[in-house]
Length: 142
Image 1 (cartoon, rainbow, N blue to C red):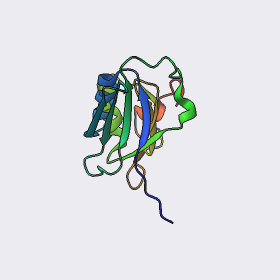
Image 2 (cartoon, rainbow, N blue to C red):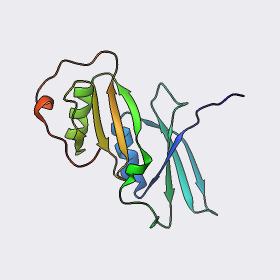
Image 3 (cartoon, helix red, strand yellow):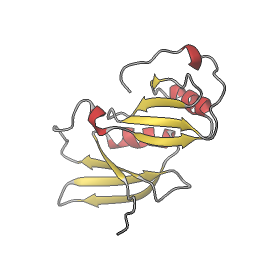
């Protein structure tokens, strides 16, 4: 028996805002599927060097009133980054709240526009603790 990772699916309320968020993380659209009969769009976004590891953004054209207000039960998506401080600064500069700052130089959490938790992990060894991150408090849930 064998198994192969395909993707992680998350439902989104605002497709453009969600695509913009994942683009800020460095993901690119790898595939798109629109189904007029089912009235939904699927957008697959992945790191440019890992097109085989996408997140699937599922957008229902007629809305999705059943979407939970807090997607904490989902868990999270996780991405490794070259420099966690630079990545978090880039996200903050573009209006993203850093829910769990990288105080340890290794791990941070942010949330997508649909409240999906995204973990960011420093590639390799942790960076030395640095300000302003070291003294930043958690904001909300992560």
